[in-house]
Image (cartoon, rainbow, N blue to C red):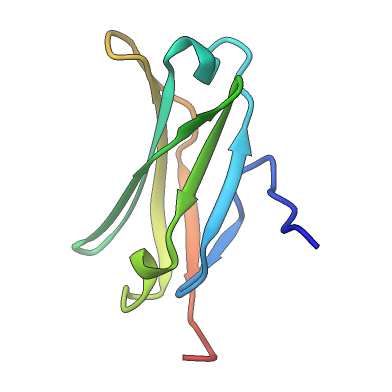
Length: 103
């Protein structure tokens, strides 16, 4: 059974898990060269990932190894869509990094 990829940014992430989601932005399709840069910041810790094109959708993946050993808790979150000459902030807020209870 395939993992169902969410179509919005998850409310929280779990340390040690891979997080993947798709976003559709009709005015800024990935097929036209737009990419979303997602940044999470917490007291000196910064995680930055850039989406890849999946047709018109933006596919963002945070690798499991990226979150291992990072402080858990609430991170400030920002997503910005850019095509090289234009940039638009599309999603500020907070995201939680939950502990890896298996590790």
